[in-house]
Image 1 (cartoon, rainbow, N blue to C red):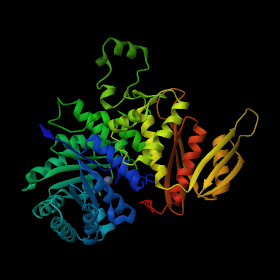
Image 2 (image 1 turned 120 degrees about the vertical axis):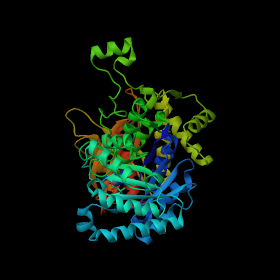
Image 3 (image 1 turned 45 degrees about the horizontal axis):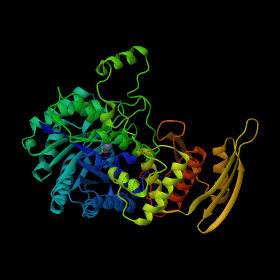
Image 4 (image 1 turned 135 degrees about the vertical axis):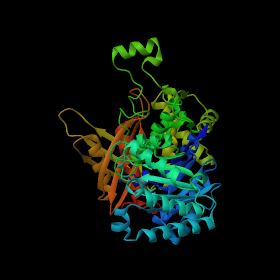
Length: 510
Ligand code: KIV
Ligand code: ZN
């Protein structure tokens, strides 16, 4: 049985979704979850794009031990050198270099002759191989490239030492049969094709990214590039959870399998959705809220009699129903710390542990049962607080009554100074944001406001994401609380703190 390698590019291609820009700490949190998920490769970013991206890739390379950490770069030496520097601390590192190979991209975008593109590609792979053992080469827009040209350039880069060849359908143009045929032709026509791992990277413009990737796997590809929740440019990339579960569920068809711990899928999905503010649609395969819900009586009856009548996968195998009751009001510090350890959340400092434990006790006073998801949200908040807290919510009072104008009174700490503010609004959230703005005067544009419940039940915490944009920077703020107006105010302040911070990266689109 072959191993199908999973190359996750949530932190690079996923981040290229407008508004999905992440900070270094957020990238680290996602990278740690990807490590628990047991992906083979984490593409951490594009170090030459900005100093922030360089720092994030470097931090991921330092922190991650069980996955290869890849950095993307164009074929220029300075791009490659920067990427090599960024992944230096990695236990296992990879350079991923790419150049466009389709006639339209070479002529209109690169303005280079095909022969010069081959020279640039071979020079790049040679340069990268001098710095590192593992080099992946991608033919951008391979899905629309001429097959003869692809054969020439790929044969040349393999001779220079590329060990992974990636065939992207960059614009999501291919159909499954056609794409599989392309992979088959390349594997059979290129004389040194057996020296490399064949990889595919499919975009979802026609909704075919997963289908095209799976067709390529049947044609011999042994690495799939994908993102959590299918995040990515335009319509996104192939969704990791769908690829992994299709291969796992249809072992009668696939001659390979991944090493993914599927029980970590849902946590990864929630984490990425929370950090980026991109909600998961309820009917999304595997990770959507309704993915395993049976509404119709006939289906319910069938499932109760014999689960396999309507279910091809077990919900618990991808992490559903895992929100076990873990702790409550009477749980002590040792139990709290032990559960965090079991969740893979390492708390190195006593100060963080004390502060997190205080928050936990406050939450347990409001909410009887504390689930793993609550602890994860609590620790995310703890990390956010450590990031940079220029603005802090001290107290709040909201008034909302039929026939009355909603009103908010807020007390904030701005640095060391306490401020009080009040405002009316069309609803309590609007009033809270207006009150905060009357102190912060950020003049940022609100791009997104979304609320999700972390667990089930009316006493669940609401997790709010607020996306703000100012002077070309886009940031996402998060807040969680059993009171969703308070969660909203916290999320707004967290976004303002990120706008204040110099540490954040500039959104890659700007
Ligand atoms: O879509 C694409 O072609 C890419 C490459 C850089 C791999 O993201
Ligand atoms: Zn891509």
